[in-house]
Image 1 (cartoon, rainbow, N blue to C red):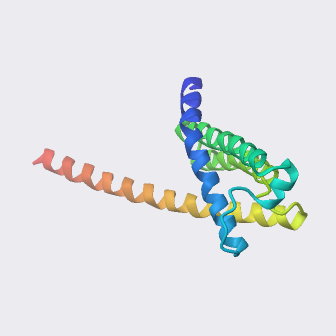
Image 2 (image 1 turned 120 degrees about the horizontal axis):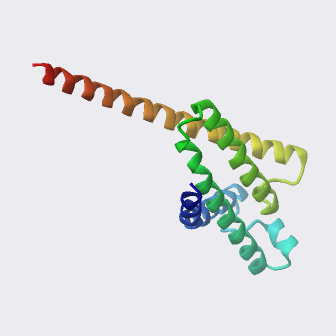
Length: 156
């Protein structure tokens, strides 16, 4: 299990960087001035230069990708219920993403900003979870139909 966590964590590094890019693209669109912001203006102010801000954000995105990918081993713990897997995974990814989003200034540094970001994150998690749930439910139904038809052919 430890080897799998490490392997997935390493594979998650480029995914984290890609997620960070998409987030900055989204933030740039929300600023609405036609410019691309590789980091938020607030992070540049905090870090003293755009380069320092980009370096910090890249490191944070690496940590995010590695952490999320490593946490995915939870879905393979067959001794845990689906509800337990979902709840623990949500807590872990929240503990990874929310502090990173705060440090990277992807959210406003106010109670409302944190609650808004956390709410948006939770909503996105639920949408993604529902998509995965119904996708797997459909695949399982198809497998069961195939198994039933194969069992019916074997009886003939």
